[in-house]
Image (tube, rainbow, N blue to C red; front, side, top):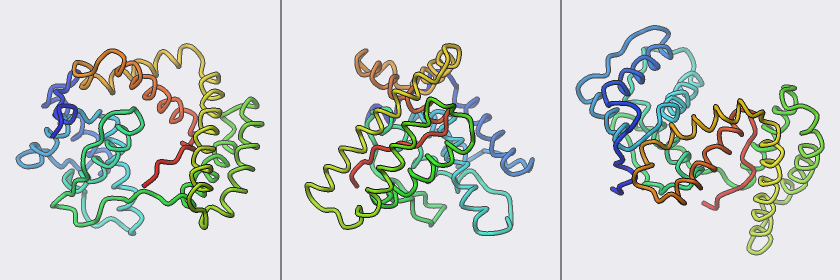
Length: 247
């Protein structure tokens, strides 16, 4: 396992990290406390040793609960062990987003459900168009986004119609265009964030990357922080990532 995956957590001692996870799981379980002890403590301690930021772990737990609720009425409180596959999935996604090395796929022995596979290009386009429409409809983006969202959504709609059959150079051209549109959307998104919000998000980005900072050259850390800040800006404005990574 790489040094990045075994980075020592800088902001949270292991016991504090586990308490934060335990408290969050308790809230997700409607106040039912499931102690993180024994093998569960070792599992969560390993997340801390890998450098999984707390907020990333929380999003992984959320993802498990979303799937759990989708199956119908809950039968029993969820143990943290069942959330590990989703936590590691979200951690891998986060590392890709900020430019860190992605560890190999892992499977939780206690949760037989397979980890999520990457979406196809047509599925990606459909999801992006839906999220852009939702972002526009919630009214929080302001008029400065109207033109760019209208134009991007129109272009994506046209691309979606033929994406399923695209091969070779045409597929690569569409993926390249998605990167260009994503960069354009980010320019508008950055401009929409006021200075106080930007400063707070920058602090959050520093906190997320704290476990990796000592092992990264300054140039690499600066790139990772810029990418982490962009990801937090997207999250703040509920904007999707238009760029598509080839499976």
